[in-house]
Every structure is written in C-alpha cells, then in structure tokens.
Amino acid sequence: MTTATETGQVFLLPDLGEGLTEAEVVRWLVAVGDEVVVDQAIVEVETAKSLVEVPSPYAGRVAVLHGAEGETLDVGTPLITVEAATGPTDEAELYREEEKAGSGNVLIGYGTPEASGSRRRRRPRAATARVTPAATAAPVSSPPSTGRRRPPRVVSPLVRRIAADAGVDLHSLTPTGFGGIIVRADVERAIGERSAPAAVTESPAPVGGGGERIPLNGFRKAVSAALSRSRAEIPEATVWVDVDATPLWELRESTRTATDAGPGILAYLARFVVAALKEYPVLNSRLDVDRQEIVLSDTVGLGIAVQSERGLVVPAVLGAESMTTAGLDAAIRDLTARAREGRATAEEMAGGTFTLNNYGGFNVDGSAAIINHPQVAILGLGRIIDRPWVVDGEIVVRKITQMSFVFDHRVCDGGTAAGFMRSVADAIENPASAIARL
Image (cartoon, rainbow, N blue to C red; front, side, top):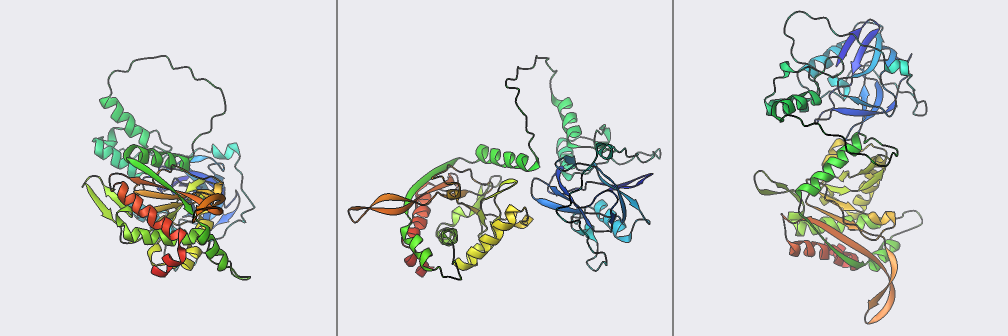
C-alpha cells in the first residue's frame, strides 16, 4: 500500500498475510539518500511467523525510514518514503492492482513478472542504517475528501473477518490507525461498547516491583498464544523411560572416518521415530475438533526444535518418511542452520506433523514438553551420560539417556503411547537390528 506526499511516495507496511497485523523492523537494507529500484529489498522485518524481506514498489531516492531497528510497526503504517525520480512504474501499478484484488503476492516481488529486468541491490549486512527521531515522526498527508462515501480503509483481512463475524459495520467506525486505517482495536472497541454492561470504576490494583518491563515482540506474542492454546485445549499425558544408548553410540562411532563424520545421533533417532510413526500412525495426525475426527497424515513433517536468536522455533523436515539416515542427517543439519538464522521457509515452519526435541543439548535430563498445536505428540531426548547400569546381572558403566513422550490423550491411550516409546527405545538399544528391518 502506498500514499503520496509532497516529498515523495510513502510506502505503508503491507498486509503480511495469515492475519498478521504487525512486524518488527530487524534490519534496514537501505539508508536515507540511497537510490532504490523496483523490487529491491529495502528492509528485513520479523513477524510472528518468520523473517521477511520487504521489497519496494517504487524506484527513486530514499527520503525517510519510518521506524528504528527493533521498533514494531502496525500493518498500514508508513514504512519508507521514496522520492520518485519518475512516475510509478508498471510493476508498482501491477502491485497495487493485485493488492486491491486480494492477491497473495504482496511480499514476494509484489506480483511483478519474473522476467523484470530490475535486479535487487542490497546494502552490506554490516552497514546498518539508523533512523533519527525527526525521520520517524515525518507527517503523511491524507488524501483529500471527494464528498462521496469512501469505502472503509482496512488493511488486515483478520480485522475484516472479526468485524464480519461480529456484525460490525466498518463504515460506522472511527479509525485510529495511521492515515485513517481501521485497526483491530477499533473493531474490538465497537464490539465491547455494544455488548459490555455499564463500567464500574475501580481503583487500580497496586503493582509491586518497579523493575524493568520487557515488551513481548511479535515472535514472543505468537509463541505465547500457541503455547497457551496447547495447554488450554489439549489434555496431555506424559510417559518416560531410561534408555541404554551405548549400542547406538558405538554404531555412530563406528561409522566415523577421517573424512566423514557420518550421521549424528539425532539422525538415527529421527529414523527410528519415523519408523515408529508408521507403526502408530495415530500419533502422526491432528484432531479436527469441529467434526470430531482424527485426521491422519500420509507424510511425516518431522518438526525439529531449534533454539535461535529469536527463541525456540520448530521447523519441519518435510517428507521425512522417504529419507535414509544419511538423508535425514543432511536435512536436519541444513534445516537447523537456516532456522537459527531465521531462514526456514513458511512451509517448513508450518508443515510439522510430529516434533522431536533434543533438549540434551542444554545439558538436562528430562522435560515435560508442551505439544506443538495442532500436532498431537512430541518426543524428547535428554543428555546421554555415563551411569551405572545392570547388564546380565552385573553393574557396568553405560551411556544412558532419558526419553520423554507427551501425547494428546484424546487421540490415544497409554498403551499406544507406551508402544510407540518402546519401539523407539528398542531401536536405540539394538540399532543394527532396527536398521536392518527398515
């Protein structure tokens, strides 16, 4: 979305899809005074879903950056002002038409043809642009009134859906968003005024501890909502077992050479999990609450919990059911590396059907994990350490790990969960035999 001022074209933060209404400015890829071309990436923003590079629909000179790095901007508020060297390009016109039509191509090239001759130019990562307070406060003029009843200005499809579901007439609202945009708070205020009883004035409760307040960014808000939903909706149960991982450890060591480290422990575990899911497919599913049906998945999107700078993310190795141990090892290493940099794809972030969590990397033994909704189960592996263990009646030192399994009790009972756990545990304790059967 764009608007014009006397100083240039103001590009507003576009609709990011999936009901997202805000984004945090992570890194500016241009600075005031830079020349930009159509489709050039100008800023990297972080949404609740992923990191996104936003391209410019205009060519010209950067006049204003409307937000500092680390600042959260609402959809529909100014992002950047560009002093156009020429009129809007054909690509920009195409973008606006697609935006009006509800096209999903609002972030990837704005629907511009792939054959476009424009090439993206990017500032070096080390050259970070900073924004002065004066720049962030630059005013934007509103379009003049024509005297006709204008359609309500709503950027987010989520806001439109909330209004439609509640029967709120968007024309009746007073917009509070930048430039006359109707935002979610406007709709919710109208709903509250219509249904809420007379307010009772109360004194605010005292707040103790005048310590620092840290606002939740978009990512943490999404994590909070997802985890709260999981805890609220899923009647989960947890089972765990101590496993002798010595045979698997020895197998992994035997495959290492001077030039090839071979598959890691996690790759073997992933292979055993995929095999166990074939035995117990109800655990590779989701629950359709509305229709009261368990929906089995015919593929395995193996979610891998990854600790990134943004926090814990769970991208998925897609098509894990068709991969060998070596293939899983390569896929997991590639996926985790990209996820730590915020480069996992939207499909990978949303494609998980079952989650594997190696919390042993944090040097802990166990965890009562939270299921990654709408999945129905999560398997966790603790650290592998030397412990005394009884083998053939004698106490010996073995490499022991604790495995915990959390499942949705609505889709199965303890017998199924225990069977799945034992399938994975038995494969860890006798990996050669398990691999031979795969």
